[in-house]
Image 1 (spheres, rainbow, N blue to C red):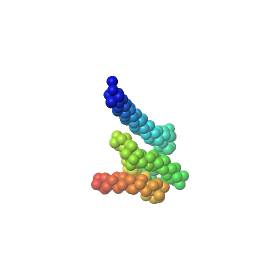
Image 2: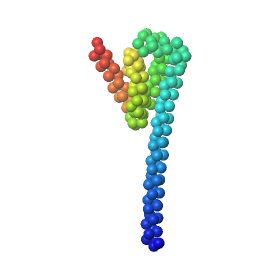
Image 3: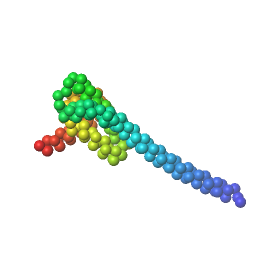
Image 4: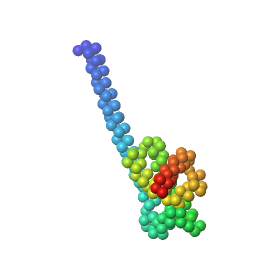
Length: 161
């Protein structure tokens, strides 16, 4: 066998090695992307369930949430507790909105999160909380996002009446 033939065989083996390596790396990247998607979903779900668990365990907190959402008159202490409940919920929505902006949130996960957000924004007390100063506690991209969602809710309400 000539050196030229040996060199051709070596180049072919090297090329195959590169192709196999690229296939392996693509597979690893795909697996990593799946793992990241699952981790993001679990983290988002944990944020939401950590918030909801105390509401389930405490009828008093659930009552406060429901009254606050409707815009019922609350005592000063209740107003502060309701405000903190809203703040915590909106931190969750802020995290979800970042995932949406960065395109790391699936359409299905966004649909689920949007339903929870809509529950909150359907409450006139929550919208009042947002408009009366809470919006100043968040970044401009999130504020614009929530303001847009509120406009949609209020347009739907106006069309229904």
